Image (cartoon, rainbow, N blue to C red):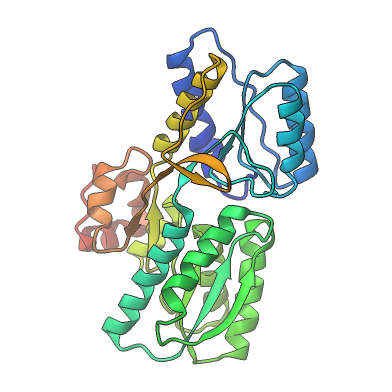
Length: 315
């Protein structure tokens, strides 16, 4: 996995993958590593896994271009590579599993534009993208542009966030708040971490927070939605992609060649559809989620707002 800036990898992706792998093959072992946003470290971790005799590599690349060397090293040893969550764009992997990242960007962007139209908002937009070394971030970025370029709202400024770091997103948005004081109608942020950073910038400046998007359905994001600080996020149950990756890995390990539903970056791929979450459908999404519970979200600080939103939970 690529980093610890987003808590999902340690909390959900790795444990869910390992659990499904154990169901499929009780005797199989999973070598798990997190590169902590260091592409060189990820290369070393992949080399170590290969040296330990890994039959399949599942990699969520820190740097989508740099990961080509991992694919080449694996291929030289006859080890298939599954690109997970983020594609490896320059050298095709053997399989790619993810949610549809371009659809994610378009969904959050269009949801925000529709909301601004409904509320009669005036002003322009800030766009806070993900890491410039992440091909999935590039797909989200393209999806956002699909939604906002012809929306009638001027794109005031745009930023590619190094390593998806919320602190970098906050610093950049803080500068834009000073630059475009009073003219920012909304912020299209590519994930919940960068969205949280954007919100913190407005709070620190002591000015009203415009509608801000997100993606990943983190607990903190759901709490910000309940509190009226974040407009939307994306629910993409990690269990779906983690278990699918385990199933494809098991097929490869048995010498089979799994077929993709589509081809992306010259790679057989399986993409899953995301769900936009706003305050309106948050109660239903929480009720159906096995990843984030209403009790996780509706702590004492948010209890009144949760009740007002119609969220039910055991107190």
